[in-house]
Image 1 (cartoon, rainbow, N blue to C red):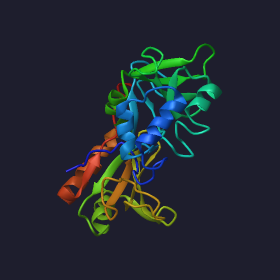
Image 2 (cartoon, rainbow, N blue to C red):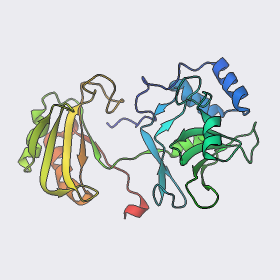
Image 3 (cartoon, helix red, strand yellow):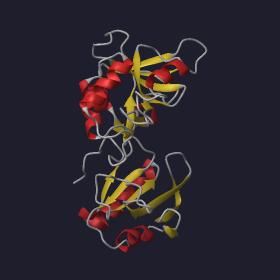
Image 4 (cartoon, helix red, strand yellow):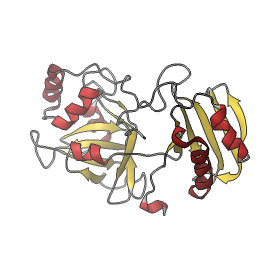
Length: 274
């Protein structure tokens, strides 16, 4: 059975220290707002970090995509980097880039950002979540993503240009590679990434480039993190960069050969992809 996709990529690598009530109080005093309880609850599980579920649907086109935007990380509290209350945190980013205020920056890439927007609710109210693009000739382009932080988190989905392949219970990698070789795949070993690299003649990926599949152990070679943190580090996992029309026979063949030893997550299909 496939496990739910976690919000964070790796909860063992937060931006800030374990969250305490005094840290929240200090951040609220510094920023002059009451932070949403839902935001605090998320940071109690992981105090900021890179996100795994990164795509949020939108009701209008943005500089990212026609129907969604991507948030790469979530800022924490009380740390020295990537935290809302640090010297180069939320208030600095608002002043530097001209984001709407009063607000609290959740994530920023400079000309685009995600904010808690207090303009309508006031500093003690429940802020909505907005996407802001300041790289415009006129006023910043603001898109409302959710009426509150909880709804925003619920709306986030995993986004990828590849199919995630999971092989629970498969110990010998030859059981994975052999069915793919039967389909004509050529296999090579990448020492740099500690993974098997497979090319599939006659197939392309979602961007029209030559298709490829990677297969490796779940934990990175240097021990710094996980590919899929919801599965054990010994699990074989992979990524298949395939166009939809080429994915069906390949994935069906793996299902037939491996049975319960093969799971797949398909990349989301947005209306603009149709």
